Length: 277
Image (cartoon, rainbow, N blue to C red; front, side, top):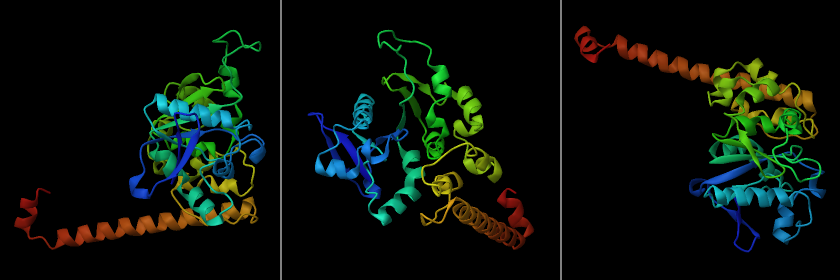
């Protein structure tokens, strides 16, 4: 896993860690601008370019906020993945939910929400209407970025903290339709399949296949990526993988129950009484 570090000179270092030695890190959730023309990419970091891009502000924000929270490393999807490497992209998308889940904190940067007036002078103006209408709530990938992390903090484009997914929970439920229990960390497996699919009905993705791929972590399954297969075919593959995963889980539970039954059946009456059952 690649992680960024904000150095004392204000520049970024991109470091790679093996699975068993990943340090505590923060993670960014945001909406993309105009693709690679606006966002800092992996290639930009390698070549030392991209400082003139609009997305560079998000990196500086995330690095500074992580440092304030005593976290030395942070992860940003635009530049911590080499998207030109198909195998790496597939691994990253299948690992994404876990990466957000394992983060110490997730910072949601809302580029279309501000706490300042238009003249930029007054603070604490009404921002809740802009919050409710933020594009962030309409994107497919941000669903897992809302649900997977333990701590999700929301920030305006002015880098002002608006609250977290607990304090803003009721508003988020009304905006997204996601159950409050899911926001509070209840296992997603406790929600039925169709309810989880309903959470994405109004969400959009740039690539049509991502409408399925962004749900891999929500259902705890893995898929190879086939860009070009189309949205419906990708969703059919996803549903097939979900069914097969549930069948496998049911078989495992059945085997455990049978083994327990057989072990109890072989107990003598005295053994059974002494076992505490």
